[in-house]
Length: 258
Image (cartoon, rainbow, N blue to C red; front, side, top):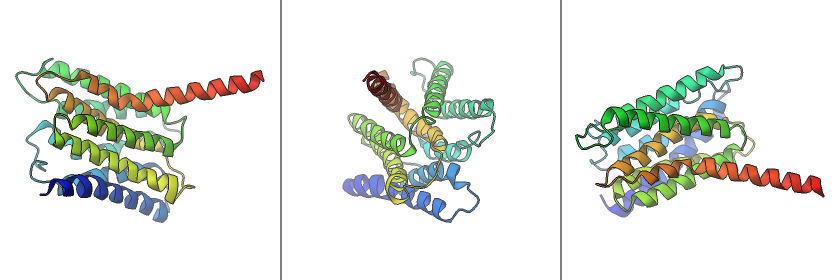
């Protein structure tokens, strides 16, 4: 397959369009108000999976490499992502769902290489802890900022991760680019097409953690010398969110002082 077709058509146009159509359709035709919680995660997952299926044979549907599990993990994150977000749900249910998803992702994404350092059991524990903290922190942040803003940061972070991964693997960069395009498609609907729609961005946090955190880990361990700093990239939304909060507090204090 022509590389330009892969990069532009499959990795950008297909996932962005698929995500936009799923989210718009869910918000347009759902009458049970389930779309408020499920539209974003289902749109992002459908976009990632539809683009992954169109990739050449290196993106196998029968997993024989650790990163081949990503589309299945995206589907799992879409299904369980909104759990515990309904009004009145206990906080422990949300924590339990995110911890279980992080642990399952780590178990599948960590390879069974003899050369893996730290060894597989320790690596699973470390990655599970990393993904748990990432998703729990983003879940908390998502209650304080707009859905459109966070989706935009998700998409831009994915673009940055794709660019960094391209130095070592174009294939991994394509997968990160697909995830970025999926979030961009979701953002388009929420920010432009249906600006007045009510959605819960918390449902999209787990799929962000699985895809971006998972791809950052895959890109980190693939080189002979692991690139541990790549694990900082998925935390960018947290940094930007904290910075935005600091700016708002500063402006508020400056305004009251005047």
